[in-house]
Image 1 (spheres, rainbow, N blue to C red):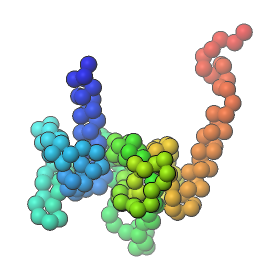
Image 2 (cartoon, helix red, strand yellow; image 1 turned 45 degrees about the vertical axis):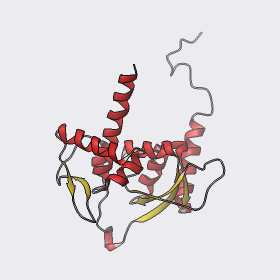
Image 3 (tube, rainbow, N blue to C red; image 1 turned 120 degrees about the vertical axis):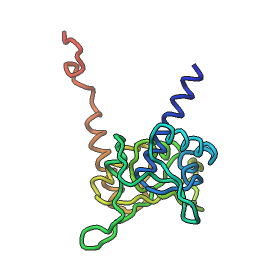
Image 4 (cartoon, helix red, strand yellow; image 1 turned 30 degrees about the vertical axis):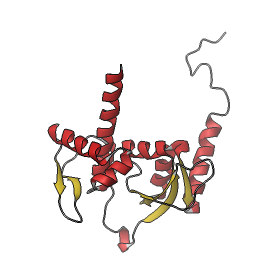
Length: 195
């Protein structure tokens, strides 16, 4: 029983590692370890396991080095489809960033989902009472509608701090979802026989 649990945890971590490399490009072992909440040595073992499984991960040496996937590699993970473009947006404009608070579970969830695709965790001196283990992060916003969906995917594990428009968009979408679930479901929809 414990072996199957550990196997699932490691498999989940390997998928998260692959998703991070797809979504963000080159990352150091320390950055990957911080995102996955494991030791750098565990990340090195996981990189070795991905390589053994045929995933083209390679190490780049030097002060700007790290691990990355060979250009052109695509997997079936959702992060591959949502990997951010590093080029400026239309008309040369750069993408906006949102400031959020993430719970430890939210960080793991974002790593597994591969969304939002471009999260940068920042150490913040601001600590919210009752959420001392939450971290501040910056998230790239390429589209306001997609940013709202990305935040909703993390549920109660994220709080949008800025921009106010994104915070309002998440609140309005959550209110619509709550309204849909406010009354009991139609018994016929659940397949319950009516009397």
